Image (cartoon, rainbow, N blue to C red; front, side, top):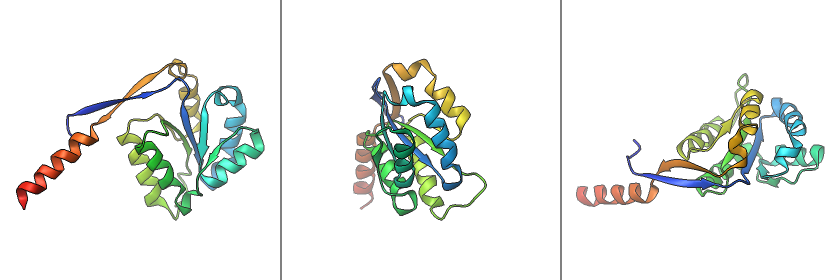
Length: 161
């Protein structure tokens, strides 16, 4: 359960965007990136290993590479979201094929919701997000105050010992 204490975190005009795609939809993401080169070039891009490498090769954009998703890349992206280093995610996932790292994918999506970052899981949503007037403005996302939550949990356990 999330507490009522809230923290606001600023997303700058220059977004930190993670680009991720499962194998069967990597081509679709690369096509989408190619059709949005001008806008994406204004932001900091990162991605899981294979996807980031392919985007760099096919588009010429600089993309910070993390490990491949099944090798821990999804968890690395999730950690960067929790640390405030990634504040926007385009994740084209394949809804028709089970992934060996499904628990990691679920954890990544959970963290994205928990830390209130914009997420697109398909081309239509990615188009809507990228063309939003908020892409060119600062934005304050709202998440729970982790410091308050930690303190509350410590007190709860102290009282039960």
